[in-house]
Image (cartoon, rainbow, N blue to C red; front, top):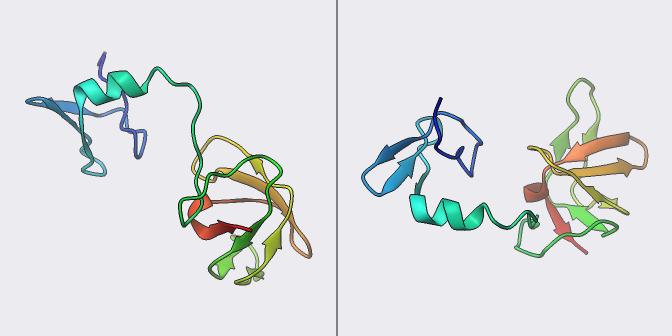
Length: 114
């Protein structure tokens, strides 16, 4: 069993040491071994929008790109306002309800804080 931490970018468990650096073979991300041990101490994950603003529960965001809804022919258009978001863990880190579409999850990289 490996005692190395998972990749901070893609959460891959197959990380390995290369000198002083840790390397992820799946996404090719490299980071310092001392940096990962210091980062693991803070339990709060900061979620930022596409321009770097910190998001919080209850914020209102705007979609910055047309997003196809998987499994249907619906599209979330650019400029759609999403009110009262909830932050969650995972790849899609925003839970929300969009008028006309319903409940869905969004990635923070496709929204901008209003």
